[in-house]
Image (tube, rainbow over all chains, first blue to last red; front, side, top):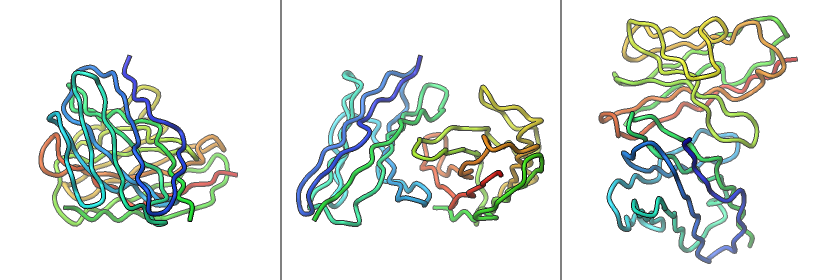
Length: 109
Length: 115
């Protein structure tokens, strides 16, 4: 079966760095997405990785290792507004998105 | 990019009634989808809305319960029929731009509470 695993909840301190991991097992692979979702709001796109390596976009970076079925989202210089759920989603061979359950990130001052 | 408008944003419904959610995209998009997100959980795909033909439903979802229309490339509706409290959820419209691996944009969601 297809499976996406990510931690349920993480806590970090304002100004610090946090890494949210995502492991996956899917039927084929056409890329991995990270989305941010604030409580009561729609998910918004953060990143897309299809090749191995690190993609940096401001304070956020996303890493992919296809051989290991692994990705992480790295958030630097954490701000209170980064408190949200972070959803990992993998596109399988049929271009269907398989969604993880999301990681709720709590930022403390 | 795409801006997606959904309405209603929220509603409280009586058991046994039906409600139609409308989704409008500000540009023509090839693919539109309907998701459900129950409290504290991730997204579950209900169906892919196909322009000019019947929607493609995921396992566990059927047309009689969730009829979908997509008359053109910018608009779709989802009806939640014969509602029960178990249908209380957030329903999200989404659209993909830029091909099959393009970014997925979401509407603000419609929060339904069924009493």
